[in-house]
Image (cartoon, rainbow, N blue to C red; front, side, top):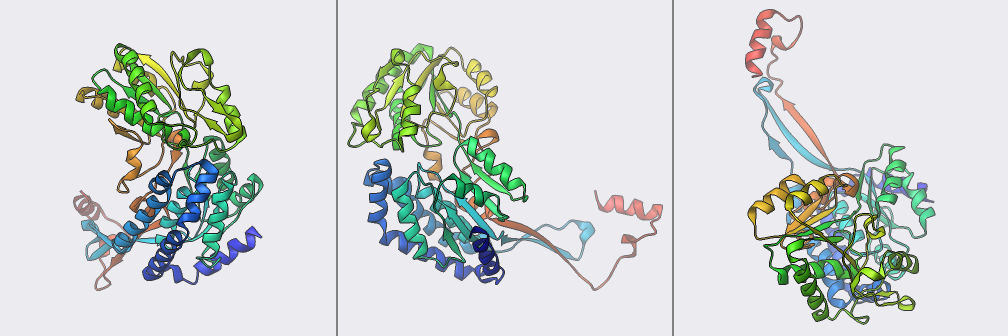
Amino acid sequence: MFTQQLQAQHDFFHQDITKDIDYRKTQLRNLKKAILEKESLINEALKRDLNKSEFEAFTTEVGFCLASIDDTLKRLDKWAKPHRVPTPLFNFYSKSWVKAEPLGTILIIGPYNYPFQLVIEPLIGALAAGNTVMIKPSEHAVHTQDVLVDLIKNTFKPELVDIFTGDEKVTNALIHLPFDHIFFTGSTKVGKIVYQAASENLVPVTLELGGKSPTIVEESADLRFAARRIAFGKFINAGQTCIAPDYVLVQASIKDAFNEELKKVITEMKLNQISFGKIIHERHFDRLKKLIDPEKVIYGNISDKKHLYLSPTLIDRVLWDDPIMGEEIFGPLLPILSFDSIDEVVEMLRRKEKPLALYLFTKNQNVEKEVFSKISFGSGAINDTIMQISNRDLPFGGVGSSGMGSYHGHFSFKTFSHLKSVVKKSSLFDLDLVYPPYSKSTLKLVRKIMK
């Protein structure tokens, strides 16, 4: 079935219909219309899957995608237009340009934590670039999956965009097919499986993974601001955000004061069982509970397995060899570690795997320069958390074990395009010096030209 559908999409792509810019815009407008018509159903599904409030559903999922469509429609003509580049002197009477062309048929594999946005956002880029698309949403966010199936099948012809549901067996069958590009969002462990499968057919991949993203709070930071912004970034979606602060490194001189401020702001946010997101399924809930050392908890650790509720939980006096520091947490648990000097933190983080995100709270520009110039990470923020993702003019993606490739806005368009290089040369005349046999005088002249 999958092979036949892939062939159908290949056949449709080779009709060159998707290369028309107006056709692409029509598909994006159809997508926007469908999202608006089904917004209430999407919100309901996100509520049932992850207990997302209407505000959170709009700002992080539905509204995010609608704004992305509008921005893409506004800029698509410019992105798709061939652009001239300089031509070196030895190619005189020539002109050179770069033209973006669609890759072909794309496979998008979505995760459960932002089950709508992280399918639709790459879909926007793939359609804008002129591709056909096959989608595999997360089976864990079952209600959102059902809405996505309804939306896709009632908006697009299957030869343009199709969607398939099922467990890891379906995903495994899809990733072994000869797509023109695979876009995967999920864990590093599964990302390696996708990468290996794609390599069998030399299929290029974009891997949006994760890792243990650190947050550094230096002694000059405004503790109230730092606590509020860290709590916001960490506990949105119950901590199930790939760029959430995974742990906090607080300078020892301010750690006690910071901890008290953090407890205060969490209480003020009223993140109770009614308003707080839920853990996606029991297996993940049980994994998170095992990471908690009750003797080190200084706030929270209230849970209700029946409703998959786990409260914001602060864990102090954490050591690097504690179980909670051995893997990405991906939940509402925040370990707190201390440090004495910025140099110590920088050297330590440089020895660890490159994280998807890094956050720094400081008023000291020398500290800012030291951290951001020496530590490699996917994206980050100074005196804030997670908000770098809201700017579509910034690429979003990881580095090293936290991911491969990037997207959002123009970067999505480029990810799903091949940038074709073209040189057009005049046929009015032909220089003999280009062709053999070559003399020493010819070489001398060429050396001057190519300088």
